[in-house]
Amino acid sequence: MNVFLTGASSGIGAALARLYANRGDALGLFARRAEALEALATTLKPARCAIYPGDVRDPVAMREAAADYQARFGVPHLVVASAGISVGTSIEHPEDNAAFRDVLETNVLGILHTFQPFVRPMLDARRGKLVGIASVAGFRGLPGAGAYSASKAAAIVYLESLRIELARTGVDVITVCPGYIDTPMTKNNPYPMPFLLPPDKAARLIVRAIDRGKRFYVLPWQMAWIGRLLRVLPRLVYDPAFSRAPRKPRARA
Image 1 (tube, rainbow, N blue to C red):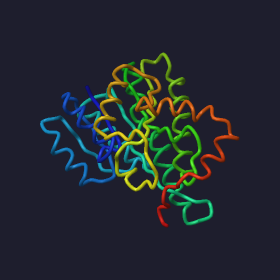
Image 2: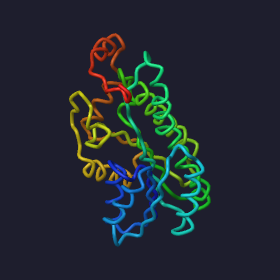
Image 3: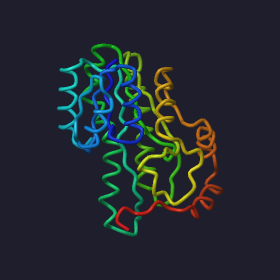
């Protein structure tokens, strides 16, 4: 199978790369950190693997990586948009605007830029899966995490739109919403993280959901129930309860 992954240098992306490499799949790994990508690739031998240092906010870099990957291995069967960033922001601080923009562009436009170069070849082949990694944080707004919550809510809705848009084409769109995963993104969170999963276990659950053709998948199962509760919790209850919640540190605090 041909698999292209963004955000592959760490966290869920790297864990997915290891799993698909163990299956013998042909991998395209895209991420900002070239050294981390190279280090990961050396651990995946003898897997067929091409690495692409770049930023998902750059559509030209994504198109070039997609063209090279398809020239080497052919049309992918699976494209996973796993790149994402999370930082705390505050509306009181105009200097946080740049961080807010970075989060939105990476977590939302990054999905668009990842999928776009592959959609037409997949449509022509009438097969393939596009997987976007969103988050339970996109279910409701969280204080101090406005950029992250907004970006993941937008990702969830965009992926839903795309799923309907591509219905009956042979190309499936899958939305994955993890809860807390033990990655560099969460290591500095100053609050409890219930049901925290190691990235390798999260990757196994995600791969199983992809194999089963899930359209929308929340992990772990406990967070799926919490997510359902959050979505129906009245604002009269939600607002006062979460207004006192600890906040993620600002990027430039």
